[in-house]
Image (cartoon, rainbow, N blue to C red; front, top):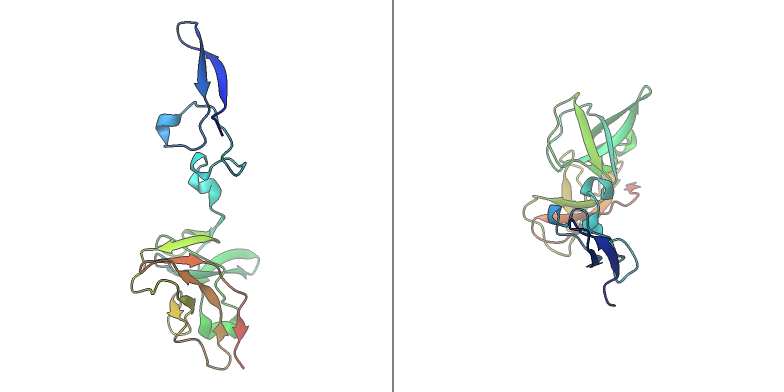
Amino acid sequence: MAAQKTLQINASGQKIEVSAVESSAGAGDEGKIVALNASGYVDPTMLDPAVLAETKVAPASEDLAANDLVDIWNDTGTLKVRKADGSAALAGKKADGFVKTAVTAPANATVYFDGEISGLTGLTPGMEYFLSDSTPGGITPATAPVTTPGHLLQSIGVAKSATTLSFEPGEGVIRG
């Protein structure tokens, strides 16, 4: 489809025809008119990345490392964040989200509920990964799923590359 255009008055007072943009290259596109993309939506490149990411900020109840899977829990009326732990299934430590940066408790942690976890190593693209029951906050591949009774088997997502996991957590099942 041809780009939509509008009339504007330039600094010299002349009327000029200006094309709307369907995507943004960043600060250089400041002040330009927005057009919907071919799908009929505002292109994500025009939105602040913080707006696109669904997040929650809460105090960490333990130190967290970058890329840890985390559980959001109620500590006597205060929402807190701790490492998800498949071995503590009966204690309710499922993976609700992940953190991108390390946090020292009791500082606030920003928890991401969707998106990609990058900076990992040794992933197999296309393989499904699960919440680890041996490393709190960690993942384990589908070839080593949780089998211990009382532990949590929770799918976390699929590797997109050797270093990136698409975070799509499942509900999980406590093994019997």
